[in-house]
Amino acid sequence: MEYVSRETIGLKEKLGILSDAAKYDVACTSSGVDRKGNGKEMGSALASGICHSFSADGRCISLLKILLTNECIYDCKYCINRRSNDVPRAAFTPEEVCELTIGFYRRNYIEGLFLSSGIVGSPDLTMELLYRTLYLLRNQYHFRGYIHVKAIPGADARLIEKTGLLTDRMSINLELPTAEGLRSLAPNKHRRNILTPMRQIQSGITASQNEVALYRHAPRFVPAGQSTQMIIGATGESDYQILSVAESLYQKFALKRVFYSAFVRVNDDKALPAPVGGPPLLREHRLYQADWLLRYYGFAADELLNEKKPNFNILLDPKCDWALGHLEQFPVEMQTADYQMLLRVPGIGVKSARKIVQARRSARLTFSDLKKIGVVLKRAHFFITCGGKQMYPVKIDEDSITRNLLYEKERLPFEREQITYRQLSLFDDCRFGPVQEGVGIGWKSIS
Image (tube, rainbow, N blue to C red; front, side, top):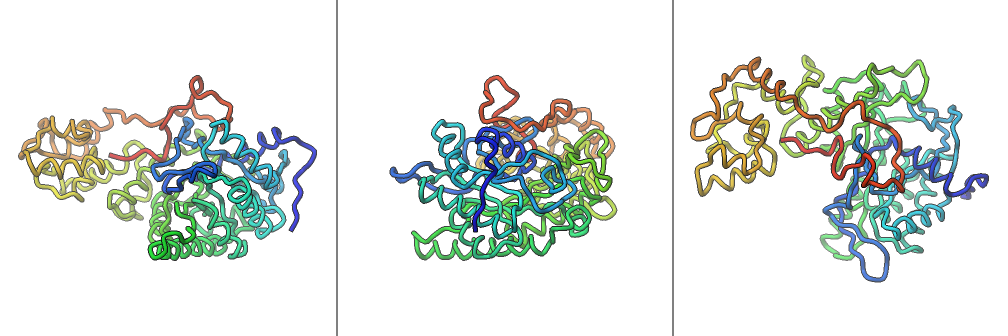
């Protein structure tokens, strides 16, 4: 198969168009794999993660994040790159992507590549172009750094398999939480075409892990796992439906991450909602917090929400909201509570819960000790006792505790008026711009 990029524009113009076109894809994590350099080839990746910088809206900018092309045969109503939109179009050749990646890596701008694409020609042609890009990057340019690539739903399984042996992480966007939403806003896409390669990748990862356990130097298939992304607010699903879908994906497909992307109305289409106040960023933030509870705190989706209470309280984080609805389980005694119960106390995170269990083996804990351990006492003191005593005399009452928690005015990780959807340039100077190391929506842990 042959594909020729547009020859009328230069590489710099292509980079501007195709990096901007990739800005709404938030599923670009870069951790979870060890790929050590061997002294002969270029780059390496560590399980602790590539050094990240995040923009104010939480988008990762440490990777070269581009589309292979923004041309697309599909006409999804929510997508800026849909076929019917009159937007500047561009396409890289595989060789151009390799030259950009190596060039930026040598200048220390990036340590990895996030590569996605519009569907050009057919799913098979697009997947073959992605495979060819990664093959050249790994074998001709000898790049061993981190690579995250999008699998194309509907592409031949053999192409996905070959690509999975060259990449660190692979993701397939679920797009919208339900099949009904997909039919209404993306009629060219089908849920089965998305879930089939997702299952293939999961099976390939499991088989590869078993093979590596037996043969140390066996090829590794998608060693950093797979992820997906859902658009939040484009269709009418409740938080309960969205969280239940995410829980099902974790359980059935062993995903590393489910990403939530607040709907941004980039197209004037009557089928699309017009969110009052702009993108539902606070709702996105609450879903990320709840997602963290699913993955690390032992919560289930139907514990946090249900059909009678289908949406999160945007004024309180999901853990506090759950605790207020289950005050019969509080206060929790710090000297005797088991690890799983400690995790359910607002203000106590995974690390602090482990430290509490370890510390109380040799000493009786005080509130001062808890503060040193890392417990956020301004939230936790409503729900705990030490040696049978409360930190302050507090009435265990939902209204009273809620008023006090709201008085604390939980600090959100962004200011709404400062949000921008401009794609950050690799040439932006992080020392003087709005970029902050480690600041963003979605990855922030809950305690």
